[in-house]
Image (cartoon, rainbow, N blue to C red; front, side):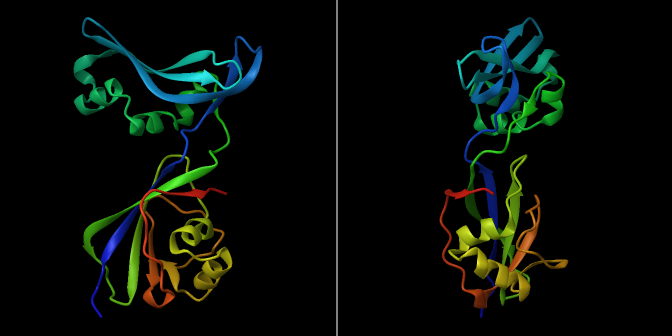
Length: 209
Protein backbone atom coordinates (compact mmCIF):
# COMPACT_ATOMS: atom_id res chain seq x y z
CA UNK A 1 0.00 0.00 0.00
CA UNK A 2 1.40 3.41 -0.97
CA UNK A 3 1.12 6.57 1.08
CA UNK A 4 -1.19 9.25 -0.29
CA UNK A 5 -0.66 12.99 -0.12
CA UNK A 6 -2.32 15.06 2.58
CA UNK A 7 -5.41 16.97 1.48
CA UNK A 8 -6.14 20.56 2.40
CA UNK A 9 -9.78 21.53 2.94
CA UNK A 10 -10.34 25.27 2.58
CA UNK A 11 -13.71 26.06 4.15
CA UNK A 12 -15.32 29.40 3.38
CA UNK A 13 -18.68 31.07 3.88
CA UNK A 14 -21.37 30.30 1.34
CA UNK A 15 -22.52 33.85 2.00
CA UNK A 16 -20.53 36.75 3.48
CA UNK A 17 -21.43 37.40 7.15
CA UNK A 18 -23.98 40.14 7.76
CA UNK A 19 -24.03 42.62 10.66
CA UNK A 20 -26.74 44.00 12.91
CA UNK A 21 -26.95 47.75 13.43
CA UNK A 22 -29.51 50.53 13.62
CA UNK A 23 -30.79 51.60 10.24
CA UNK A 24 -31.45 55.35 10.01
CA UNK A 25 -34.26 54.82 7.49
CA UNK A 26 -35.98 51.84 9.14
CA UNK A 27 -35.61 53.44 12.58
CA UNK A 28 -34.53 50.20 14.25
CA UNK A 29 -31.83 47.56 14.31
CA UNK A 30 -31.75 45.56 11.09
CA UNK A 31 -29.46 43.17 9.28
CA UNK A 32 -26.98 44.77 6.89
CA UNK A 33 -25.63 42.53 4.15
CA UNK A 34 -22.01 42.63 3.03
CA UNK A 35 -21.99 43.72 -0.62
CA UNK A 36 -18.46 42.40 -1.11
CA UNK A 37 -17.45 45.78 -2.50
CA UNK A 38 -15.02 48.43 -1.27
CA UNK A 39 -14.82 52.18 -1.73
CA UNK A 40 -11.28 53.56 -1.89
CA UNK A 41 -10.41 57.26 -1.73
CA UNK A 42 -6.87 58.60 -2.04
CA UNK A 43 -6.16 62.19 -1.07
CA UNK A 44 -2.53 63.09 -1.52
CA UNK A 45 -0.52 60.51 0.36
CA UNK A 46 -3.44 59.47 2.57
CA UNK A 47 -5.94 56.71 1.95
CA UNK A 48 -9.47 55.90 3.14
CA UNK A 49 -11.04 52.48 2.60
CA UNK A 50 -14.64 51.55 3.34
CA UNK A 51 -16.56 48.30 2.94
CA UNK A 52 -20.10 48.75 1.66
CA UNK A 53 -23.10 47.19 3.43
CA UNK A 54 -26.81 47.37 2.54
CA UNK A 55 -29.85 47.13 4.81
CA UNK A 56 -31.72 43.94 3.96
CA UNK A 57 -35.06 45.75 4.41
CA UNK A 58 -34.68 49.11 2.66
CA UNK A 59 -31.26 48.82 0.94
CA UNK A 60 -29.88 51.88 2.73
CA UNK A 61 -26.09 51.71 2.43
CA UNK A 62 -23.61 51.87 5.28
CA UNK A 63 -19.87 52.26 4.77
CA UNK A 64 -17.75 50.43 7.34
CA UNK A 65 -14.40 52.14 7.79
CA UNK A 66 -11.52 49.73 7.21
CA UNK A 67 -8.71 52.30 6.94
CA UNK A 68 -8.95 56.02 7.70
CA UNK A 69 -6.38 58.67 6.75
CA UNK A 70 -3.72 55.99 6.38
CA UNK A 71 -0.46 56.58 4.55
CA UNK A 72 -0.53 54.86 1.16
CA UNK A 73 3.04 53.65 1.62
CA UNK A 74 2.11 51.84 4.86
CA UNK A 75 -0.53 49.69 3.17
CA UNK A 76 0.45 46.33 1.73
CA UNK A 77 0.50 46.63 -2.07
CA UNK A 78 -1.26 43.32 -2.65
CA UNK A 79 -4.00 44.25 -0.19
CA UNK A 80 -4.41 47.65 -1.83
CA UNK A 81 -4.93 45.94 -5.20
CA UNK A 82 -7.42 43.62 -3.54
CA UNK A 83 -9.50 46.57 -2.33
CA UNK A 84 -9.46 48.06 -5.82
CA UNK A 85 -10.54 44.70 -7.30
CA UNK A 86 -13.22 44.04 -4.65
CA UNK A 87 -11.48 40.80 -3.74
CA UNK A 88 -13.87 38.46 -1.93
CA UNK A 89 -11.18 37.17 0.43
CA UNK A 90 -10.75 40.70 1.82
CA UNK A 91 -14.51 41.19 2.15
CA UNK A 92 -14.62 37.99 4.18
CA UNK A 93 -11.53 38.92 6.21
CA UNK A 94 -12.69 42.37 7.29
CA UNK A 95 -16.34 41.33 7.33
CA UNK A 96 -15.65 38.91 10.18
CA UNK A 97 -13.78 41.17 12.62
CA UNK A 98 -15.95 41.56 15.72
CA UNK A 99 -13.69 44.25 17.18
CA UNK A 100 -14.04 46.37 14.05
CA UNK A 101 -17.84 46.21 14.29
CA UNK A 102 -17.90 46.91 18.03
CA UNK A 103 -16.15 50.22 17.43
CA UNK A 104 -18.96 51.18 15.02
CA UNK A 105 -21.83 50.05 17.28
CA UNK A 106 -22.57 47.03 15.14
CA UNK A 107 -22.37 43.28 15.72
CA UNK A 108 -22.04 40.16 13.64
CA UNK A 109 -25.35 38.59 12.76
CA UNK A 110 -25.96 34.88 13.19
CA UNK A 111 -23.73 32.78 10.96
CA UNK A 112 -24.72 32.19 7.34
CA UNK A 113 -26.66 29.10 6.37
CA UNK A 114 -23.86 27.18 4.72
CA UNK A 115 -20.25 26.82 3.78
CA UNK A 116 -18.21 25.79 0.76
CA UNK A 117 -15.29 23.35 0.79
CA UNK A 118 -12.44 23.54 -1.69
CA UNK A 119 -10.19 20.47 -1.62
CA UNK A 120 -6.56 20.80 -2.65
CA UNK A 121 -3.60 18.44 -2.78
CA UNK A 122 -0.51 19.30 -0.72
CA UNK A 123 3.11 18.21 -1.38
CA UNK A 124 3.20 16.54 2.04
CA UNK A 125 2.93 12.76 2.24
CA UNK A 126 0.64 11.19 4.83
CA UNK A 127 2.56 9.87 7.84
CA UNK A 128 1.04 6.40 7.70
CA UNK A 129 0.03 4.53 4.56
CA UNK A 130 -3.05 3.18 6.34
CA UNK A 131 -4.47 6.66 6.97
CA UNK A 132 -5.65 9.60 4.89
CA UNK A 133 -4.93 13.08 6.26
CA UNK A 134 -7.01 16.25 6.03
CA UNK A 135 -5.68 19.69 7.01
CA UNK A 136 -8.40 22.22 7.84
CA UNK A 137 -8.32 25.91 6.90
CA UNK A 138 -11.34 27.85 8.18
CA UNK A 139 -12.62 31.29 7.25
CA UNK A 140 -13.18 33.60 10.21
CA UNK A 141 -16.31 32.92 12.29
CA UNK A 142 -16.81 29.47 10.79
CA UNK A 143 -16.82 26.47 13.14
CA UNK A 144 -18.82 23.59 11.62
CA UNK A 145 -19.38 20.43 13.61
CA UNK A 146 -17.18 17.47 12.78
CA UNK A 147 -20.14 15.27 11.88
CA UNK A 148 -21.70 17.96 9.63
CA UNK A 149 -18.45 18.55 7.76
CA UNK A 150 -17.27 14.97 7.29
CA UNK A 151 -20.71 13.51 6.61
CA UNK A 152 -21.04 15.71 3.56
CA UNK A 153 -17.49 15.36 2.30
CA UNK A 154 -17.23 11.58 2.82
CA UNK A 155 -20.75 10.84 1.62
CA UNK A 156 -21.76 9.30 4.97
CA UNK A 157 -24.60 9.89 7.41
CA UNK A 158 -23.84 11.73 10.65
CA UNK A 159 -24.50 8.48 12.49
CA UNK A 160 -21.77 6.82 10.46
CA UNK A 161 -19.34 9.68 11.21
CA UNK A 162 -20.15 9.37 14.92
CA UNK A 163 -19.35 5.67 14.71
CA UNK A 164 -16.01 6.39 13.03
CA UNK A 165 -15.14 8.86 15.80
CA UNK A 166 -16.08 6.39 18.53
CA UNK A 167 -13.96 3.66 16.92
CA UNK A 168 -11.02 6.03 16.45
CA UNK A 169 -11.17 5.68 12.67
CA UNK A 170 -11.62 9.45 12.40
CA UNK A 171 -9.33 11.24 14.83
CA UNK A 172 -6.75 14.00 15.27
CA UNK A 173 -3.08 13.78 16.23
CA UNK A 174 -3.85 14.20 19.93
CA UNK A 175 -6.28 11.28 19.89
CA UNK A 176 -10.00 10.69 19.47
CA UNK A 177 -12.56 13.38 18.69
CA UNK A 178 -16.28 13.67 19.33
CA UNK A 179 -18.69 13.96 16.41
CA UNK A 180 -20.31 17.04 17.98
CA UNK A 181 -17.05 18.94 18.46
CA UNK A 182 -16.43 22.08 16.44
CA UNK A 183 -13.71 22.02 13.80
CA UNK A 184 -10.75 24.34 14.47
CA UNK A 185 -8.61 26.24 12.00
CA UNK A 186 -5.33 24.41 11.36
CA UNK A 187 -6.63 21.13 12.78
CA UNK A 188 -5.42 17.94 11.07
CA UNK A 189 -7.67 14.90 10.91
CA UNK A 190 -6.69 11.30 10.23
CA UNK A 191 -9.15 8.98 8.47
CA UNK A 192 -8.49 5.24 8.38
CA UNK A 193 -8.55 4.02 4.79
CA UNK A 194 -10.83 1.14 5.73
CA UNK A 195 -13.51 3.79 6.29
CA UNK A 196 -13.53 4.09 2.48
CA UNK A 197 -14.21 7.82 2.01
CA UNK A 198 -15.83 8.80 -1.28
CA UNK A 199 -13.78 10.72 -3.88
CA UNK A 200 -13.84 14.40 -2.94
CA UNK A 201 -15.36 17.09 -5.12
CA UNK A 202 -14.47 20.77 -5.28
CA UNK A 203 -16.64 23.64 -4.00
CA UNK A 204 -19.40 21.55 -2.45
CA UNK A 205 -21.94 23.51 -0.41
CA UNK A 206 -23.03 22.02 2.89
CA UNK A 207 -25.49 23.02 5.53
CA UNK A 208 -23.68 24.58 8.49
CA UNK A 209 -25.26 23.75 11.86
